[in-house]
Each structure stands twice: as structure tokens, then as C-alpha cells.
Image (cartoon, rainbow over all chains, first blue to last red; front, side, top):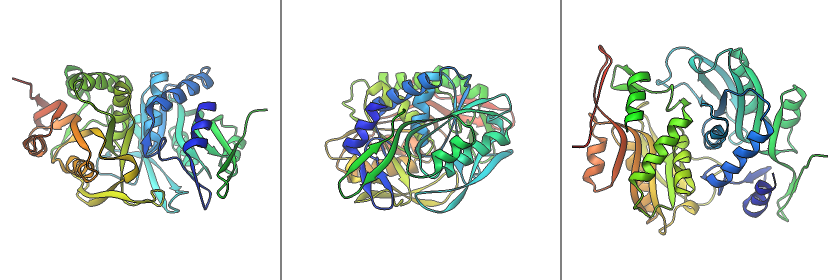
Length: 194
Length: 194
């Protein structure tokens, strides 16, 4: 998605350790007008899918998921990190290792909000090693629901997550795929469809 | 806001310890069409304010804030709980005690995303004892920015938060104010303007 690639080029900051900081528009400050365009593009890409719910994970996936959901006119469910006293009844749970922090945490979603009838689009801001997405796929499958696809804002194409998820046969659409980035020159190269 | 009050009556669940569970439409599963109506109402209420940014706190404030922000055509910044390696440079920080969990945590926002030029609308899903909101007000004031007002989905009018914040002279608009609720009968009474 050209608009997003241009924004990454303009405002993204490359850091050591394969970190791409986009917190000026994506995951700390959020450019809602950009999110609306991302939502329209994901609606176009998944127009043929019978999506009735969007699943994301707190915290930085929530904003994108809500704006995308407006295009689909479906509710959003966000998976929560660690048990909260405000989630009662039974939950589906899985474990996810954070790329950013390294630590492993429990992620839960109430059984009330995903059922075997659901056709789910998973949304997140970033795809790196795929741990978060694999956890979300696991939650959906625990409920017997269908993963219709995954929509990502930025995929780091030089990490293994995208490849692993596509190899599972899950439909994955990333609005920008960074194939390489160079901290010293600030250069970012994007992958485009053949 | 009648639509929200009706939804609370219909789907809210009263629990012991002054807990009102609305996770079927507000803060676990999110009804985006309802959020759009809430956004329109907050735009109407704050139409006279020169708002250029919305501030919220992760996680459950983010969805509402993003949908509200579409009405104002402004970016959203969400305050983060606890230090993350992905926030570099300097941050404004404050401490907030969670009503739900009881524990005290650090909340931060990058100095890059709030400045003395900003006129900020603070958005959150719930107002109970006001700790989260006081923390967000503190962050805005640390930056020398202006709090134009606060927009809340559900205020628990029988807890002290709303009174304390209004006493500070901050303009606070809650879309539904629960004045009392009875766990045994399931009755919820709302406060309305005189």
C-alpha cells in the first residue's frame, strides 16, 4: 500500500536489533486518517470473505482493528494479556513470546466472544517472528472458529513470521512488507507483488 | 445518551464490589457501530473546543478513542503502562492505581507526542474513582498542554471520581452516568441532566 510505504519512509526510524520505530503514526501516536485508508484497503483485499468478527491483541492492535471493523460492520474482540479479575467464566488461553520484550505471557479471550460459528479476520499492527499471530490463530482454533485471514499493517519480511504463517495455508495480507532496512543509511526496501 | 443507557440495561451485568461488566460491547468485545454513535455525541458536546489531539490509556480506551477521533479528524496518543524498550528518549510519566486490580503502575507518554501547543480531549471507557483520569490530566499538564475536556463512556456516579474531576474545573462529559445499581434485582438507575 503506497500511502503506508511512503509514511514509513518518511517517519519510520530504523534502530539496531531489527527495530523499526513507527510510533509517530502507528503504535503510540496513531494517524486515524491513515488507518481509515488501511481499513478500506483491507476491506478490498478480503471482500470475498464472510467475515463476521475481527480479533486483535492489546494494546497496539486495537486502534487499527476498530477502524478496519468499521469497513466490515463487525464487532472487534481483543485478546488480553494475563488474567484479569474482570474476565470471569471460562476463557481460551495461549502463550505468546513478545518480540519487543522477550518475555512470555498468557493471552486470553472469553469463550463468550468466539464461537464455532465465527469467521474471523485477525488484525495486528506488526508481524515479525509471528508469535503473536500464532497465538491468535491458536485461540480461534480452540474455539472451533474459522480464520478467514490475517491483515497486518507492517510485516518485516526479513524475519520468519510471514513465511511460517503463509506455509500454514492461512491467507495473510500485509499492507507494507519491509524486505530490508539499513540503520546507517536509513534506507528501507519494500517487497512488491510480482 | 439513551442508546448507551439502553445497551447497559440490556447487556450490562452487575457484580459484587461495584463491578459493572460491559465486556460484551465495550471493553473486551467492542460494538463499533455503537462507538460511532458515541463519537458523534462527543463531537456534538465538544464542538466549541479547539481540540487537536485525543489522549487515552491502554488498553480499553484505545478503541473508543480511535472511533471518536474520526469525528474530530485528529490523531490519538495512548499512554502506556510501564516502561517499554520501544519508547526511547524522554517520556512524561505518572503513577496510576487500578480500580480493577488494585495495583499501582507507571504510565508514560513520549514527550514527542504532547507539547504545550496541544489542546487535548481525554477519552476513556470508564470513570470510577478517577485515578486513571487524574494520571492522564497530570501527563497533559506536565507537557504544558491544555485539557479541553474529558469524554467518558460510562461513569459510576456513586463513586467519587466524577465529583473530584468536576471540582477541579475540568469539563467532563460522561455519556452514561450510573447513579445506582442493585446486584440482586439487576436494576440500574441513570443520572440525567436537570
